[in-house]
Image (cartoon, rainbow, N blue to C red):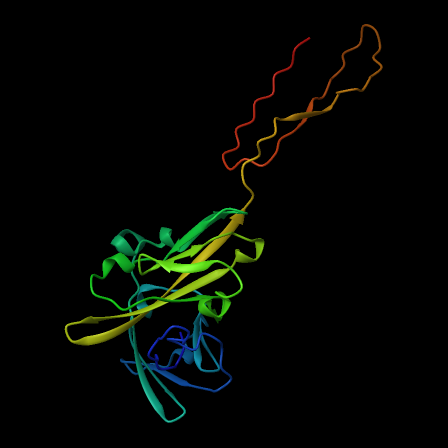
Length: 229
């Protein structure tokens, strides 16, 4: 969680500075406790950011940070998975197929009927900076569309947007972990052993005959190997 103000996100502007900063920030909660001093060490300050190694319900609340002459308030709400509703964390993981087109939705955005356009980042880089090098665009206002999926697309994406609740503007950042897998093979399984091999056996003695089969990649893998005399 960074101590930084959101900007007015344009075509290729950062709603937040997503990269870490060496500038120190002082953090506190509304109750007055300083998170740097938590006994369990689960919350630590690094530069202008507050890092949570584990998150619990007691981490919910209003945080205040002081840096560079600014005072910024950040409200944190920690929810149990069963109470997430349309903000379910299952949306935070997307699996794309190498060489195909792929879609990455901004998680939980359907919870908000009135919201701004979405600003997308690949790691710390705004997506709009790489649009001239490959086919990539935003469709349906909040979904990132990749024309072709590459191995390098296996990373963390971020989407930022703002909305207003009871006259109060809120800024939201969600992360999406993207995995890239090969397309399912079209080739049949190949017997690698004992195909074309011979084994010597001793008459009257038991002998184990191994069968080795090579299967290409399958997203749903359910191999069946039968042996016949």
